[in-house]
Image 1 (cartoon, rainbow, N blue to C red):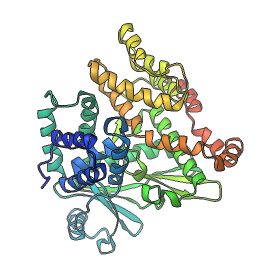
Image 2 (image 1 turned 90 degrees about the horizontal axis):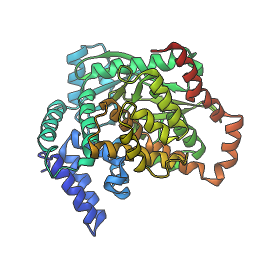
Image 3 (image 1 turned 90 degrees about the vertical axis):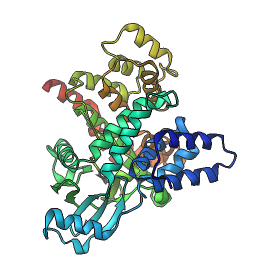
Image 4 (image 1 turned 135 degrees about the vertical axis):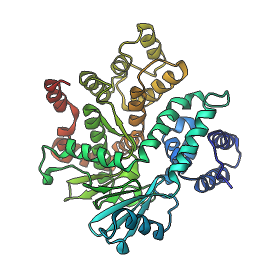
Length: 411
């Protein structure tokens, strides 16, 4: 019924939801529609789920279920693709489905994990991009969304390429693991082994997922450490000019090493932000230092470097409590910066928008940290860990040491 879904129709249903008196039924209708409309719109729903200010918190929370529970294609199709691309190199008879996303699904096959694209997903993406290009200039299209949608559809194209994911995962693994012993790795990235147009083969790295439906069963202190760790991962990537642009709770999990230590397993490197060629090292360092200290004024100076001073003054006037170094105000202002760029058509490098969009994908994780830090039952553990335990250890991943090292290297 919904195979002809397009962006205007989807936004119409969301507008209808905002006006509906029976929101529960309206949410179920939207989710059913997205389940039947294909990978592109399921992926778009994922993007919307991290933008509560656009669609409302109630719908955003409901759409988060689409992060990990997308419709799966048949096992027979997967086996046929593996045989076609790799012959009998992998034991496809023992393939066990472990998850289905919007673009592909993943199987465990002995010590390997095999990621296989859904049939027809290439055609769906190309059709959606064509539709978007035909409607984005109309008066019916929400101009606030335009910059986000431009990044979203460009990212979709990247995710269709198994070669791109193979290459970017190897770059991240080198970045994270190059100078550490395996036993010291806070972050674990699967080793990429093989790929074709439709398949990606990597090592299978087990972890406990941090999903909405199982969140209550996870020790809160462990959840806090895991989310803080992922924020550090974002800072490291930003410093080095590489960001995982699809960091939601379905794309990482944790391993308990002992009562205090954990490791974080990170998946799905198909959607990446690579700003190494576009943003100089010193500018990345300046932005990252401002970001981790919640200094929004300095962030704006860095982002709009080279723009007229009147632009910088104007964007600062649109911020909330710009002189307050508070993480929640910082998150709100990052969204406002994106909105300002979209509404005013500021001639800024697209890579800046991509960087801000990528940072926005970490906001639900940052929100979880903020909520857990308020939990009185965790306070004693958290304070101890900040002084003596693993959260203090995480500070070696905090960017300032990296900043000093990188500034000596130059570009």
